[in-house]
Length: 478
Image (cartoon, rainbow, N blue to C red; front, side):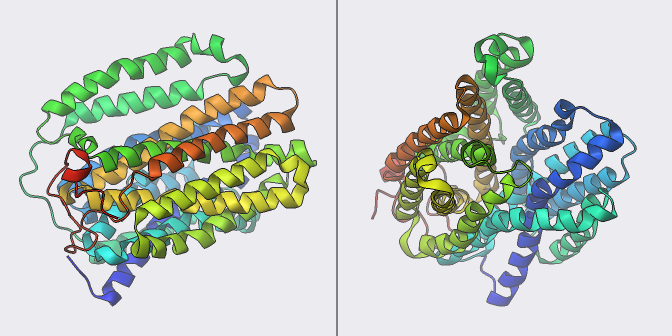
């Protein structure tokens, strides 16, 4: 379904605003934390639940909202997701207690879980195949902008009271809802069958158990914490439920996750790359701590040293989108993985290069991530997944990346906790992530240079369904 350039631009604005709203809220909540802690007298450990409960419900919401979008239409689900996010924001601003705040953050996370995969699926539905990379790059750029705009907005609004940091989402959500109701496609898929309720419940339980179990791992006592019910017990529960979920999905009339997607080697390979990218992304949380340990940066201002990385991502994302349309995903993924690995190796030796070297290598890491996260992976999935599975396939991106982030956070936390010299510990952690980047290079070499359907019809479906093997999906065409 091709649209005119003017209507496509208007539609991209709606998608841009929706994704920006969800992404900015991750960055803008940080400045509110001290005031929230003081008002409700919560401990540091409980305060961290504002982040973890958002991530957890975001993970749970992503596959469910993606599937509902494929079944009941993009417009209904996208508008509902934004409405849930706006409702959660209003509830946060009105919260009389910390418990109510946690419920509101869960609503926000659940709603935002569907925004990015549905936005990506809409791009696959309405944007011509030869321009999809550029569109995905524009949406990917939102995250870089959010991490610049978020803290600035926080600084401007915080003097008015921390609740205004959440009120700001409400009018933005209303604008997106009104525009989305008129501009988003609303076709429903015929003959979709019953919704896979059992599969949805099982997948939610698996993601919740895994995410909460990993979050309870004590990196300073890794083995003993894994033997506790709240950590190892929950992770084991997730592993036990996984084969049950697979068996249910194989029999489901309309599964939440169609496992036949993974019979397509391109989809399976990009899934592994996405997990590795999530691992690297998680490691970047340690950058401010590394700056404090290695260069004596003040803890209060160390987070500003992330700006060169964000700048690299913001500049790189739109360029990556154009490169995807011209060159295809393979060279972009190889370049991104190689640049990322080079930057991570440099970070590992940054103490020898000084602060200027640290800044230069973080720019490299940002450029590498812009060519690895988001747009290239989503580009492959848009062209390899059949139209009726586009949103589900896009939802997998969030699950895979989230799994990589959770595992890497626990593993790298163990590395840094076990070495007393913190500058050295973080250097080793970045070199471990560089090895992850090298693995991503090797996997990227197996990605098709051009994607199935890239020169085909506007639907972009080069295949009628998941295919087994490279040749069945269209060959390893250059």
